[in-house]
Length: 132
Picture (tube, rainbow, N blue to C red):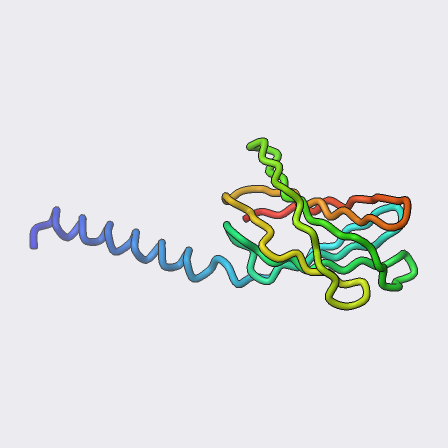
């Protein structure tokens, strides 16, 4: 093999190795974020955030820590690109716990997930920053 062929082979192997390392080290990292509103403590959890459909688990409690029964939605917004997607309605799973399945994040980059909590005559929002 010529010197040029060895150099090309080394470059190809390095690129493949870099891609494999990037593939193995991305995903499967759970994200657990917390925020608050004037009335609620909100926790947002994603098991494996990625481009595409995601399942978002949400916990809502009052300031004393008691679970809250409310209508909860998750709205993904990519401010840099001007993308605001349709909010996903979360389904109650346990007292104070909700799941928003198929919350779409169609591209990689910085996202804001706005969790809206509607209860009685009040609506409050907690905003979470997430990078995909």
